[in-house]
Length: 114
Image (cartoon, rainbow, N blue to C red; front, side, top):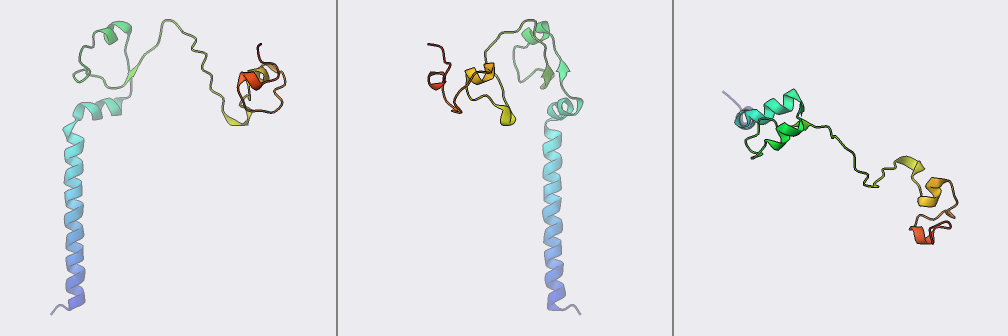
């Protein structure tokens, strides 16, 4: 004869098994629903040239989601990335001039263009 405690433990265990089973089935359906995306993700970025990129008319039907491209020319956008403690405080500081320790615009910098 099972006691009340054993019945409660069995019911909780059964609910956990059902919940994990539903989660497993949902996960498998999610993974198999978009095979093209999973295939592209596992094989990494594909190298595409200019002609192949120009041939894409509908992005939903293109065979490759992830692409590696290389440009034939470079456009200077004047955007710079500085990281860490060595970030310049103003343009004059990056040239080696004094900025009086202010993190400010060019107008407040001691050697800003006039």
